[in-house]
Length: 176
Ligand SMILES: CC(C)(COP(=O)(O)OP(=O)(O)OC[C@H]1O[C@@H](n2cnc3c(N)ncnc32)[C@H](O)[C@@H]1OP(=O)(O)O)[C@@H](O)C(=O)NCCC(=O)NCCS
Picture 1 (cartoon, rainbow, N blue to C red):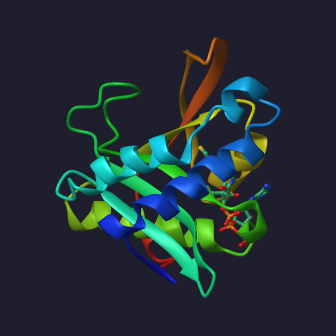
Picture 2: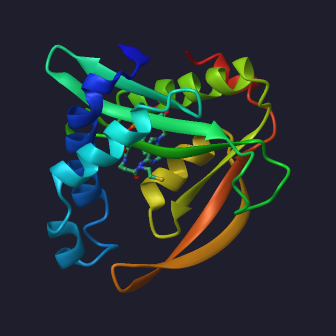
Picture 3: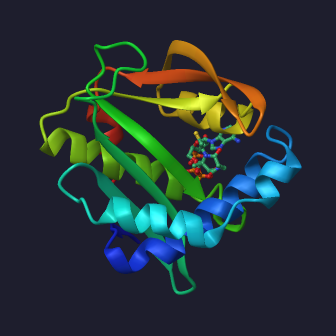
C-alpha cells in the first residue's frame, strides 16, 4: 500500500533511509561515513520535513510489517541545480533491500508524478550517483532520460551524479 506520510512516520522513514543507504552505497561511499549515519539524526530531519507538508510530498510504502519504502518530491521553484526546464524534483526514493524488485519503487514514483500533476508541475528530474547502476536502470526503465551531470563532496569523498528527466509525467502517473 502506498499512502501519504504523516508526522508519525518520521522514525520509520529514517530507519528505511539509513538501512537502505548502507546497503545500496556500500561500494560507493566510505564505510566510516555509512557507519556514522544515525537513525535519530535522520529522524529529526524527516520530522522537520514532514512538518512542512505544503512545500513537498512524501509517500510511504507499507505492508503488515510496517513502512518499507518512501519517496519525496517538490516543485523546483527555488532549486537551481540541473536544467531549468524541469519543474519538479524527486528528492529521495528508498525501498528496503528485502522489498526491492516487487514494484513498490515504480508505484512510489507514480505517486510523486501524480502529486506533481495535481500541483501543476508537468515535468520532473532527479539526481542519482553515477555509480548506482541498479537505480539508473530502474529510472531508465521508467523512461527517464539523461539530462545532466555533476559532482559533490560527501564525507570527504568526491561522488559523481547524473540527472534523469521526464518531460511528460503522463506515463508515470498511470502506474498508480
Ligand atoms: C531503486 C529503487 C527505488 C527501485 O525500487 P524497486 O521497488 O526495487 O523497483 P521496482 O520493483 O518498482 O522496479 C520497477 C521496474 O524497474 C526496473 N528495475 C528495477 N530495478 C532494476 C535493476 N536493478 N536493473 C534493471 N531494471 C530494474 C524493472 O524493469 C522493473 O520493472 P518490472 O516491474 O516490469 O520488472 C530500489 O531498488 C532502491 O531503493 N534501491 C536502493 C536505493 C537507491 O538506489 N535509491 C535511489 C537513489 S537515487
